[in-house]
Image (cartoon, rainbow, N blue to C red; front, side):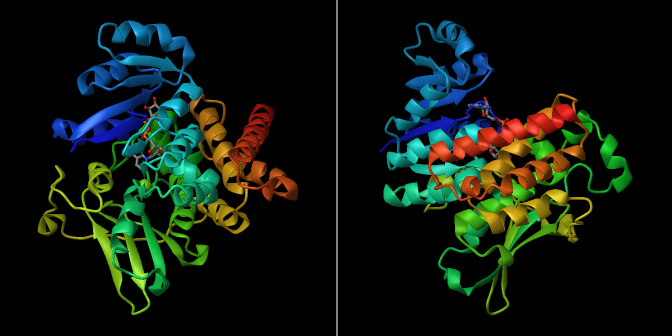
Length: 389
Ligand code: NAD
Ligand code: MG
């Protein structure tokens, strides 16, 4: 039986890895929707090769180019955020949510509302609207599967276990591009330096977020929301080799570690075949050659983002949406050369401090509209702070 699948963010790093897996067994899948951004040539090529029913670009100005590129293929073309959300309402069995940023939330929710299994790479969905995502999945009987290496690892370590026996959830961090830099050099880190990761090959935004540890900050919140565990049980450990992705500690003192090569096709493939395990084209580790694994505690001074995430996990409510939106805006500012590398955390902290005092805003009910409003307000505040700097 073929499975109907859709990939949101098919032209990105996770999207390409997902397509790599499904292309190995094309008979097994029927592709419903693919979506991308500016890379119209790649989106059209993917849609033709996979015989997708519809291809959608996020940008309306690219619609004529997409139509041209798909002429004669029988693939429908569409554009804009609303068209992406509509594509997510088309019936599918398995949906990959791999758009980067808060823009991934509406299509993910729409897919869950159809009851589709949602493979969630877009961690921003859980950071901005964790309770809404979890409740929507529950209400529609939809399965939600993590596609972040750490969260897939925790998920796998919990198979057959009782959550009440969990004492610790430890997610690992490579430490990013600057883990060995003197702290006083960080303010002058350049965009090119921040855009290269020691172990993982990922999209530019998450790569920079790894250097600043904002990625791990988002993942702390993602862990809290996905597994519903107390923030106090979640730990971050710097592990430069990126071979252990996470560990779960139980009340008998056992730690179950998930070990594997830094290749997202493992987490994607696990979610694709879940609840089965199938052969995946990932490297088999040679432990003798690896020799040793290292761990160190993350320094608060080097990684202020972790402290901010702890505060967000306590406050909850709209603070996740505010945190993420301020982070996205600060990251845009760094990419555009308007602020320095270490200023990003300062901008996020100022926005959080300014908006956290607004109890009405923080305690708003978890609806998509309220999350969007908090997101918008945080983006505006962050932009003001950046332009005043
Ligand atoms: P990427 O930048 O390589 O790709 C992002 C995709 O989203 C592209 O298809 C792009 O066209 C699309 N996109 C960008 N902005 C959009 C918008 N406003 N509206 C609609 N589509 C838009 O990113 P990535 O590295 O593949 O990451 C995707 C998601 O997966 C992120 O949430 C990231 O945190 C998460 N993730 C990635 C990795 C990884 O190894 N790359 C690992 C874990 C989690
Ligand atoms: Mg991760």
